[in-house]
Length: 527
Image (cartoon, rainbow, N blue to C red; front, side, top):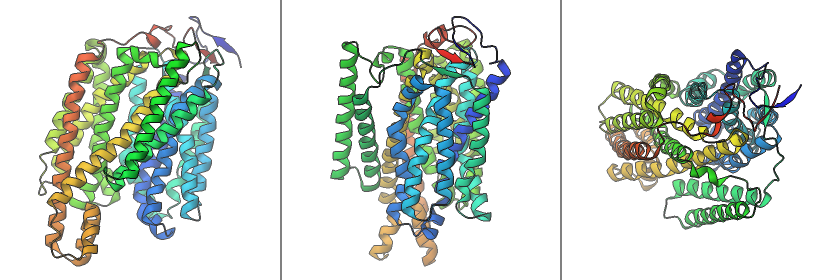
């Protein structure tokens, strides 16, 4: 193996074909992480029975993963820049595969919670480092297409998770939904080891331990507070206190980073990146798209199951129109951007998303799948225009020796935005749902269960054989969904305004200024 610092040199072994095969390995890794997240939701009822898990433990199956992921996304990119992105990605894949096997054979709820935490440790690097690698191995002209492939793999996991989970749970034991990861991870390890070049920053930056501690503690506290608020209500004192502590820790983290920068130190993140309109508004656009998308992913499965009556497999299949729209949008948007610029493509994408969401907000309880398929496909189309283009604008402003840092900042902010999105939009749905719900005549205990969720309400109505209760539950949930979709439509309109007003028409310098063969004068690439 030889290591070169490129100054217009060409990496001989990194041919055009091998770059795309390497991207396929990165996309497969990302797909596995996404599948693991979505397939768990299908397995929760089975886990509740087989592991005798309480409601609190079922929540911690998800929350333990979310908290570790939120804590490690930011340092993952910096560590990749320092120690080598390929090396750490391989280690993360091995950890993810081992933790998947541990999850599959966990013998108690507590053991599964611990295994999910280790799983998130590997996932943090798998979600961050591929984004950091793309500007290194692809030219500026190829990069938007590469981001589209990676983004599509990430979003394809949302409908595929319930589909795969439904098939596995219908034929095998619950551990199979985790064991599925192992062979895919093994193939990804081989592909990454043989096809991906090593890349890292040339200088060994000192590790900002204080910044690392402040960022991890702040992200964990803020994310935990948001999760607690989503479960216990935004008026819950403990949730408010935890969010306030998280915000203060993150404010202290920013202050510490500014102090280090002012005194010639080596901060954990480079806040000067926010001076670039491409990075700032590309990241902001990605956050708003993520916020709106998580609202749809939160309500869509519930609508298909509680209102239209589909099972987990049918629910997954009926989310495919969104993925189809995403693929088409990304392809068309990728061809459009070189002609019209990022500003126009992102603006068009958010406008289409807004129109789709407002159409979805007209849903009535008597409407069938045709309307949902139409507006979900349109939403996917707009998302395909906006999200890959916004991410490319942000990454295009990051120098290649700091792509790990830049990608981790983008992913961390999107992760927190996703958690906040689910909590805030979940509150919007639940408030509107409960306001329209008619539980008169029900015992207090049954009424409380019905108020918890539409799925629980439909189950109670089935047990009682009460058609009026079922109609009330379904109508109330559709009303809540409509209010939430209208809220997301408003967010998309804000995305139109901010994207058109502030995004640069063309990509910023950063990676685009690097040599055409995909290597930077500042990045070290091993081949």
